[in-house]
Length: 343
Figure: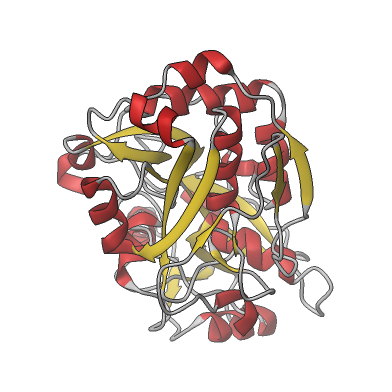
C-alpha cells in the first residue's frame, strides 16, 4: 500500500483487510477531498432521477437513471426515517478519497464514486432524498452507532465480528484482481499453477500478500517458483509492469478496474487477467450496506437493492464504474462473513 493510503481503507477495501494501493495516474483532482465532512444531495432528484458518475473525471461513464419508488418498501422503513424523508448515507473516504469507490469530483464539490451513487439509487427506490456525508473510516462507524448516518455505503466487508454490532445488506462481491498488460496472454481463474515462473507484485502487510505467499509455498512444494516483488507506490508498480520487470500486480479489484480504464489510451494499457475472492478459496467475500443492528433498515435496503438488480439499474451502475465483475445475483441480509479468526 502507498504510504498515503490510510490503514482504515485496508480494513474495508476487501475481506480480511484487503489493502487499496493508491493507483498510478490518479490525478489530484480525483483524490482530493475536503478537509472536513461533506454533505451532498445533488445527484438525486424528487422525481426519481439519479445521476451516476457525476464529475468523475473519467472514473465512470456519467448517466442519469430513472428509479421508480417502491411504496411498499417505503412503508416498511422505520418511522423516523419515513418522517425525515431522507436517507443519510455515510461514506468513510476522508481525507483523500479512493477512485472509483468514493472521492471528491472534478468540480471540487460533489462526492462521487460507486459507493455514494449506489446509496443515492437505493434512496430513490425507497422514496427518500439522499443526504451523503463524508467522514473518516473510524468516524463512519461512530456515526452509524450514534444515529448520525442511517446506512454506510463505503465498501465495508461483511465479517462475523461486525455482524455482532451491525446489520448488513450485501451489494457487491469483495474481490482481488490480477492486473497485467493488455498484451499479456496470462489468464487467471483461481488456479495458482498458472503463476509458476512468474513475477508478481503485491503490497506488503495486506491480505493479498498473505494469499500470494500461500500460493508461493504451494508452488514450491511442486518444484515451481513464484517470485514476489514489493514496490513503494503505485507509480513504481506501473513502471515495473510497463518495463517487463513484473508479470502482474495482485491487488484490490476496484482500484485495478479504475486504473485499467485510465490506461486505455496510454502506451501500455492494462487489463484484468482474473479475480479471486478477498476472503480466500473457501468463501466469497461480500461488500454490504451497513446499518445499526436492530435499526430496521437492512431489510428495506436489501429489497431496494434486489429491485435495482431485477430492473437492470444495478447492472448499469456497475458497468458505469467498470465493476461488472463484482456483481451479485441478489442482496442478502447478514450473509456469511469472514470468520472471527480472520476478521
